[in-house]
Image 1 (cartoon, rainbow, N blue to C red):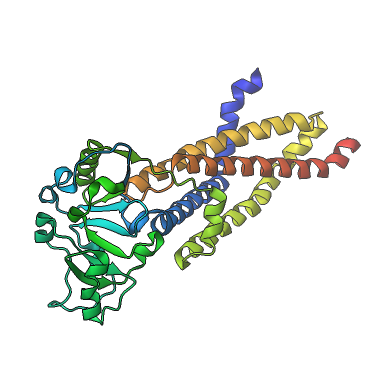
Image 2: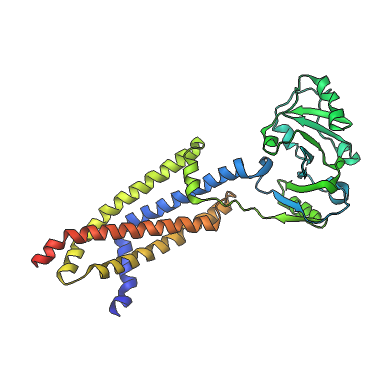
Length: 349
């Protein structure tokens, strides 16, 4: 009972006496969070976000047949930065509304103003069946590009562009969204720099037979760190730096625990046993670890504040569980080592 009453004060004394080591433990925790957040951001942006859209994107899939066409659902005049990609089932053609001209600016193309162009407001307004070919044309051979309108059943092929964006989905023709048969569209991706535009367009599509699909990346924490070692130099630097801090933390754990050798000796001399010592040490370690986890949680608010929040709460919890287990293992190993070292002294006493 006395031990329980004095436990908070004992814990505070331990925290004060080992403040430098505890700060190192917190630094290790924060470094792991920064590395995980950066690695997840890289994986999502490079591999998991379709068509290299932004984090604002929304994916919808058709759940009900309707007769509504794109003009009946989305009035592009109500938006400034809206992007919509409409996929047609079993087709290498997609419909596109690109008010940002994102896919034009990011592509490789021939600058030929009198021969090539991009979608215009007139195209969207009139629903003109025009489009551009991607990755399967020679933009230098203008005549061949223009005559391919018969192959793609268009009034005009307006450009020939090269971009890796479309390769993953095996797209070779991008057509004015207002000229496709929208009843055949099975999936839609919405994006904009203005999240309110995304919300408004999403609501209109849901009203016309579509349902929103949740973003579930299912990333493994172990794979996040392993993959970061083989990715870009910035990820590699952050990962190696975090591993270095973690190794330093493990090394310092043995040095800091050495100061408790005399307490272990005294405890053994007065009849203290290993189980009681381990229970007390593990309890203090767990309490301090939980305090540090609560402090580390503030990092998530920082990520949200600067708008770079990519790790979810599940990943955060797994990292905290990892740190808790590491702390408990280090405490147990250290106690076992120094307990055995004092064995002969206890026997002589």
